[in-house]
Image 1 (cartoon, rainbow, N blue to C red):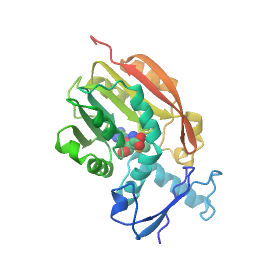
Image 2 (cartoon, helix red, strand yellow; image 1 turned 90 degrees about the vertical axis):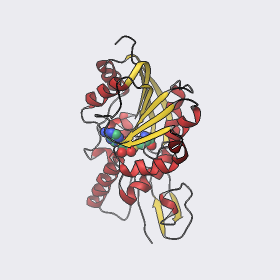
Image 3 (tube, protein in one colour; image 1 turned 180 degrees about the horizontal axis):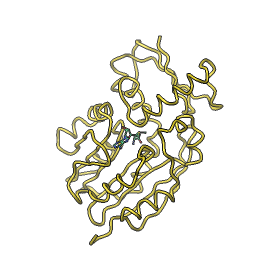
Image 4 (cartoon, rainbow, N blue to C red; image 1 turned 60 degrees about the vertical axis):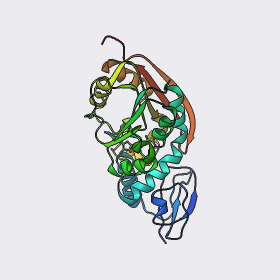
Length: 267
Ligand SMILES: C[S@@+](CC[C@H](N)C(=O)[O-])C[C@H]1O[C@@H](n2cnc3c(N)ncnc32)[C@H](O)[C@@H]1O
């Protein structure tokens, strides 16, 4: 029996998983291992000591930044469920039309990519993510659309993207900005690949709530307020920036900001 403890989520789910299906499906039948997603609301995990707790927080933070290996694949499945609400919300804020070229940065398990693709007719959605593990997971989910040429997913860095200037009508990124120590670089790159009149949406969890989660105290995360993001977007050249506050339950995080901006025409 294997027990996996993921601290920081406020649900407790135990599932029987099979080594094969669990790696590729939300449905987790089988008998290989017992995986426990454990989230005590008081933050205490009874059977690990403080040093182990710190190591766990660090390991989870690294997985959030760049999921890898078996834990990364499980992490991806977890993110697909937990982040669904905020991803849905962000997509409602972006006026995505059927002919748009859309980019998601840091797509993780690729569920939002799939949702966007289903709205498009002549349009197309590209995704870039630092993690090869996530690209493989998301590619499996979006296999048919990739074969049809409607989706293209790549391993890469948001600060150096392999796209031509002014390619996209919409760019979004959810729960990724924490991992950019110098976000000016990534935002300048987003501005470069955004078409004139194109709209950007960046989602971040509430800074104060995030600061209370052990994973964010590891030095891996950098926390921002919505106003911080507005300032950075304006510095990058975006205009008409505004914050839409959200209240969506994601375990210890129940508030967040979707920050929107537009690349002006003629710049
Ligand atoms: C916390 S996950 C969020 C995934 C997804 N957006 C969601 O809402 O479930 C962060 C994702 O961003 C990716 N990522 C982190 N830094 C990145 C960077 N500099 N460029 C591209 N992707 C990055 C990670 O590999 C990971 O898949």
